[in-house]
Amino acid sequence: MITRSDIPLRVINSSPEAIAKAKARARRSFRQIRTENVFRRSLMIMGLLMIILVLGICLTLAWQSRLSISALGPKYLWNKVWDPVQDIYGAWPFLLGTLLTSFLALIISIPFSISVAIFLGEYHPKGWLPNFLKNAVELIAAVPSVIYGFWGLAVLVPIVRSFESSIGVVPVGVGIFSSSLILAVMIIPYAASLGRSMISLVPSHLKEAAYGLGATRWEVIRSVVLPYTKSGLFAGILLSLGRALGETMAVTMVIGNTSAIPKSIFAPGNTMASVIANEFTEADKPVYLSALIELGLVLFLVTIVINLIGKRVIDRFTNE
Amino acid sequence: MDGKNIKLRLGKSYGFQWLIYVLAFACLVPLLAILFYIVKAGVTKINWHFLVNIPKPVGESGGGIANALVGSIIIILVAAVIAIPIGIMAGVYLSENRRSRLAYWVRLCTDILQGVPSIVVGIVAYFWLVRPWDIGFIHHKGGFSALSGSFALAIMMLPIIVRSTEETLKLLPDSLKEAALALGMPFHRVIFKVVVPVGISGILSGVMLSVARITGETAPLLFTAFGNPYLSVNVGKPMQSLPLLIFNYATSPYQDWLNLAWGASLILLFWVLFLNIFTKVITRKWKVQL
Image (cartoon, rainbow over the protein chains, first blue to last red):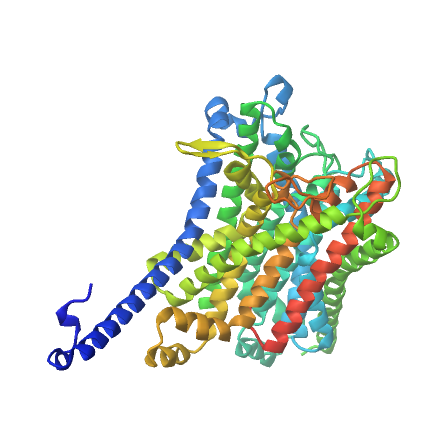
């Protein structure tokens, strides 16, 4: 609504055409302000959408798993038997499988990822060969997980099988060990690229002081660079762990998919993600489906916590 | 100083240096092995017939992956159409409101979304779009559909686009925006005609990275797009996609299907690597920080 006060005083006493023009101008600028406000508000709504999505995911998982939470209670998590046919649900085999594969993968991958980080951050920050290594390691993260799974099934599993028969365990090939190997490869880039950027942040006067005291290169790395970047490297490892916990396809394809508790690291098993991928569309009873979703809820919460701790550590490190 | 001691220390230093060299380059072995093996197994399977035919039933040799190629393209395009505008606008919001309380929560939730396991996104998309639901006057019929798959993939694209948009726009000098505002340009035109075009290289890189990421995603599609042995272009119906086809055929016992899966793997791998390398090259050329 255009009121008299919106029209500049000097036009009020002039010709009617001038007044009409001024009114039109005022109307235009009002319209502009309105579109601007609408635009600002729609930007905010798009931002809010992120929050809504996260809350929506959380609430959907919690609501859909209410059946199993109320019927099975907290002991669901450490009940050792998973037998949907008999209506017995226990998540312990999958929790154990997830923990085993993830931590084994982490242990295998840490020497490699830290080496890449030290190589690129400390020894050779520049040059074509380091550049090539950096890009190639980043490409490891780009390969789709279903291709890792397929390759693992066709190439890695037979190798593991012959390795198993040579050390005298039942040669199944598929199992916790194979999936840990695949996972270890897949998570190298996360810790490596974060570690690299952290190591390159080490102030050079610290290193120069150590060199000045007569330290060798390795001694500088061990007693200056690594202690200084400790928390950053830890964050990188946490982020890799988050990846490993939630990884689905590659693990589903090589872990063997049995719901029994794995007796050794060479035994087949199941992780939380792989059991969801395998049984979600077959779940015919409401409690069965709800038990699977509760696994998803646990997975979701655990990865959130791990990622947030990792992010917090990185922020603190880079702000220091 | 003891001369022997310093020799020992230097030897140790060189020893560790070489150990680190070896371990660092050992990371490339699995990557090269995968590339080599997929190329070797896949390259003989790909020909014109393979690209324009749909899979044959078990027992008949031949067949192709046309349905998966078409399905992948449609699902990704729809996901991009959903995610790109929302992602860019949320990114603009974050870069325009750096210190507000709401922006802090939006940023936090974007970080959380980035870490959500893909299978969880699949479950959620299943309950939102595939399961039939009914609230009063809205009746949602549900059923597996390509659209629900696109929706799940769009959720996975969003955080990447949001963060890359925000990071790019944060680096732009404020004077640019201030000059445009001082000329009397309305805010939305400043954003669309000045801020976004200047930062378009970074935003585009983020979009391409996100497309590269979702191209290979299988888990969110398992309960949404579901897969389809026939060629389908109806987004309201189940649709095949490359990763789904690889997953289903890779675990099958039939040699013909395995062959299809190898060919599809090669195409998927090269497409994803191409997108990644292309993004890297243009980010270097445009000097974008991601």
